[in-house]
Amino acid sequence: MLEWLLQGSPGVSAKLHCQDGIFDYWISDSGWYRVDPVIRTIYAPTGGDELVQEQRLWGVPTLLCAMERSDFFLHAAAIELDKGAVLFAAPGRHGKTTLAMAFHQRGYRVLSEDSACCRLAPVPAILPGPALLRVRPDVFDGSAPAGSRIAAVYDERIYLVFDEDRRGTDDPVPVQALVLLRESANEIQIQSMPAQKALPDLWALSFRLPNDVDRGRCFKQLAGLAAGVPIWNLYRPLRIGSLGATVDEIVKAFG
Image (cartoon, rainbow, N blue to C red; front, side, top):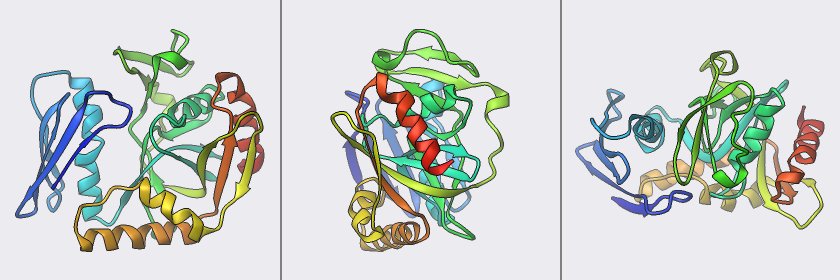
């Protein structure tokens, strides 16, 4: 059905097959997963790096089961403020995980660092998890932030696992804002965006199967999310030195 290279993971490729409603998903750094969405069962590979295999489990295999129950995924990080979840949506290498880590360092709960599992009813919400951050070496100072520990170090990513008391529950968290991450030279600006203008961005950041039925499902869900949640553009410099001011502006706008 599909074959692609993973963004942010150089050299890692994936393939997805389907026959009679059963999916076989292969990813080059983990192996084969078999997914039966109807009975919500995932058969994971054996051997290899268990941490990487578990992290990959929460990608496409879980996504396929979520789609069966009418949930959907968005390429986004998410954090929890007092009024609900704020999603930071963007392609790979646009600072989602780094921004999520900055919020974790401030004591806020991180709900997702890369892929957000969303549902529309009864209100737009995100389902939290997994409880980790995969940070790039160039934004990591060598020590785990308070409330987390280093689980593994790889060439492209350092895996940070949250402490138990920082994870929270798996209950859905209502979404109060969806923020599209943009880059600016120096200024930090948060600007409202009309829902209809955001749909092309959301479409590019969603996952769907290559058939008309699933494309229709995906578009309907994204339109429902855009209609039910305020959408904003966040322009900010992609520099570590600007992270603190960026967090301040987001908390001021939505907290």
